[in-house]
Amino acid sequence: MSEVRIGVIGGSGLYGMEALRVSGERRIETPWGEPSDAYVIGELDGREVAFLARHGRGHRILPTELNFRANVYGFKKLGVEFLISVSAVGSMKLEYAPGHIVVPDQFFDRTRHRPDTFFGNGLVAHVSLARPVSEALAGVLFESARAEGATVHRGGTYLNMEGPQFSTRAESMVYRQWGVDVIGMTNLQEAKLAREAEMAYASLSMVTDYDCWHEEEAAVTGEGVMEVLRQNVALAQRVVRRAVAGLDGVENDCADALRMALITDPDLVPDATLAMLRPLVGKYLVQDGHKLSWRR
Image (cartoon, rainbow, N blue to C red; front, side):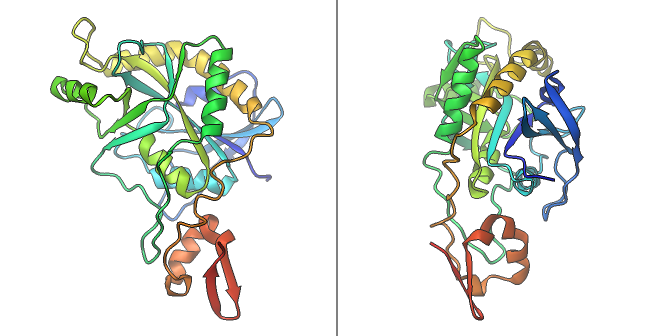
């Protein structure tokens, strides 16, 4: 099977679009266990795309339970260079109303229980996350959403909370004071891992509610979030379809994120760790006789 250049992670409704010709499903084994579901592979207007239901089909996996490493590693094994995220967020600003789309460019971490790196086990790497989102992919998503008639906002900070409970009002009011723009439960770990895997990552954040800070609006509920998402699934499908076409000729601006990030002398890295991470670091390994070094 040929490599798939574009991946999409979100709800299972995303690959229900009529234009998608599904060619099959792939279950991928990873060193970190099973991804959330099988990857649905299909052709969209002549371009191969891989879709993954983030929470599994039927939405059966909590945000904290998501196997982020397996999900992103699976996309890497498929050859994905651009990873489009579609997810629900709460708005922390009055001007971002339910039904709007935000394409954030920053993250703030409020999680506590989640692995969020491929490295360790004898191999140290420090990637830069000063700009945690691919500017190239974010630009394509923004223009695609605008072309489809969405009210879309470019930039802003996504606060990643732990969940699965929604915020208390006290927390929501503090987050507002911090100046964040939207709040969600899933995107930060994906962004970190995609950067380590040298994939361009950006998010279509679909605003579903005002969290619980807005005293004139009902507090966020799971039922309310899912209802707004169901209403907007057709819009999300159209934006994704246009974005996939819009990536023709676009360069992956995160393709060398590991070049200066690998710290440990590769001769000291356990063989098992190198084997696990070869899809990520293999292109940087240089062997001269019995000695290994990193290509810079």
